[in-house]
Length: 347
Image 1: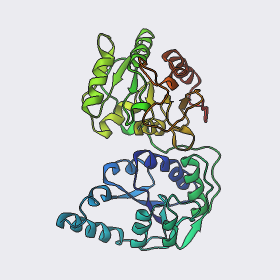
Image 2 (image 1 turned 90 degrees about the vertical axis):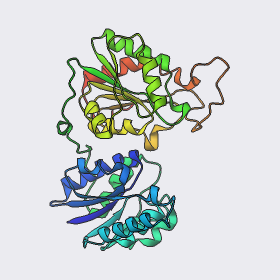
Image 3 (image 1 turned 45 degrees about the vertical axis):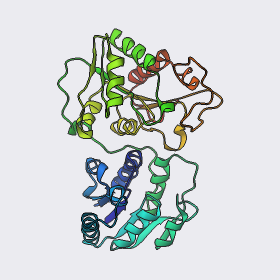
């Protein structure tokens, strides 16, 4: 069976789709999948063995100037490529009008969520068959349900992302290391720098190294501040996603915040902890067999706000992180390492 899967973005959304794809691979013999994805994430679908072809789309870039000659040429090329195959099924797993229109371009019966299940109900008008998946569950479970109904199998009891860590060569380092994903988009999602330093000190004292990646100059400067004066902490050079994934794949443990890279850690099934304060892990948080989620116990959390309304003058961090201090994180990670990767051991 050959299907066209449309799941274009974001980074977290793309990783949320992998367990559903792994379910399908194990339940549908001979399954081949072509995957339409935003160009920034085109390397990721190829990590999964069921993916035959990755078809990048550049809608985020095209929409800024849809009338430019180059963009219009690229759009025609995308249309031709998506129409080159006859598919047994065209499955829109995004549930947006833009993704539904991409599905309509393709050759094959179109299937997607019903209007009550879609993020944008208008998208359902472009499908020939509709699937009901109740809202309120984690995105991974909703996608697994969608795939199971679309391809007619029962959702397996446990899940895996289907990504093999051995595809990445281990970095040249002599000691076991913990990797800290300290960067994210909102200030209220940042774990305090003082906490990162304390956690690094605990990791070093226990015989591990610590490595700090970064993706922009703000994160670079934060990494330098966290590492300052601490032997055993390495600030990595700026890395591509594939290069960084090699470091993630071979880490002894990973600690992160609410960031797309925490979903990469979950997919690699490396022992990891993800810290959530202002945001909610229930519907879209990092989830995986080796992932521990640490959420704030403060009554106002998750506030889903970019600005903390409870922060007092002189506070070095939003108060929601006081219940997730370095001692707790270190203890949880060590427990995860000792226990191995038991499924669904979420905090």
